[in-house]
Length: 266
Ligand SMILES: [Mg+2]
Figure (cartoon, rainbow, N blue to C red):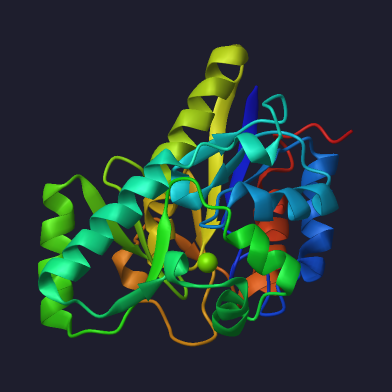
């Protein structure tokens, strides 16, 4: 028998511009009824994602910071014990390059929570949670494209990459991605329950999602409000009909209707 896992980005995908997922509730409930786990896979921090996981009553795996942090409900949820050593190294490296070459960019480490609120539209509580970063550093580039290319090359030599998300570019280790984290979680399901065949669905709207969309059995591109992504670059990926939570809802319900013979509804 086949079992499915649904991996999803949050901002612009499951969440609308008000950071709300309510328009996707019918599909979320349909997945729950079909015992299909939803695994959030976002550039957000674990601290931020704890709120929405609680709201959505998700108690399994959760992937934070663009694939850099994988969390399970069994792990210690004490936020005070989060390891920030990777993020600290990223901030130090970026700061050294900025000082040596005079690059113009700003990032979370430069900001107070009021700055984060201004740039993101997050509430005070949400902004503070978004600053509890462990393994990535979001930045806004304010220099030329040519100098961005130089910066990226210098980062790469130090094992660091810059990934474009919805609003920010994210400094992170080269060997991490949303797609690689999806594979790790899939492998754990396979190890725990080898008696099943496992399939994956992935939903996302931005370049940091492409790795999981391309690796999933069913990749679903959620169209963006601000600009259209060239869909032709993903021959196997289907496109939702609407942006964010509405598109998520429609695409998941449509996919569920295709596989309803396979899943046992409770
Ligand atoms: Mg997104």
